[in-house]
Length: 206
Image 1 (cartoon, rainbow, N blue to C red):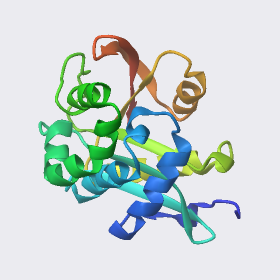
Image 2 (image 1 turned 60 degrees about the horizontal axis):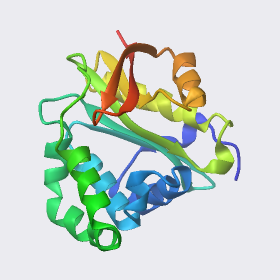
Image 3 (image 1 turned 180 degrees about the vertical axis):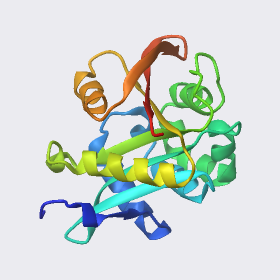
Image 4 (image 1 turned 30 degrees about the vertical axis):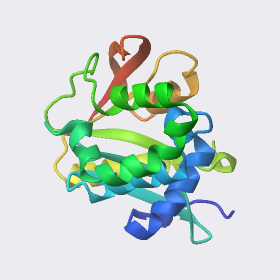
């Protein structure tokens, strides 16, 4: 792939969803959402794209999507409302994973989309970065930094006054250092689903 430059970053569209899902599957092997399958991942990113408060950018190399950053302006709707938009498609796409391991999958889905225990308090006016991913061969090449910069610019244009994200506490030094380098500060440690140690990180935009 040719080097990624700022001109290759743009807003995502529906035609990008399959490519975004493909990047996700390669960037996050073994993650729970990845184990639900490509169909589920496509539906998830489609929901983000259709969200009127969504912020969704991609970068390209050789005219192919090689990375993405996605999130939304914080609102009272939270992820449950987002998931409900495409609920029939979500249910249909997750059937293969449920058949393989019904208890584990159904339990995690309920926690992911319904449970609110341990959720951190995101400041009013913040945009929340939900996911950023690049192809493994591009890691360390600057693509993630460009995507984060583009995400921040879009969020600012939409009226966000700060950026928020959550990331794992344990075995996650590279990601924590990446966000710290770009001006994000750890403001809270919390337990997601009562057991997963997470950091809430914030960056002021104004």
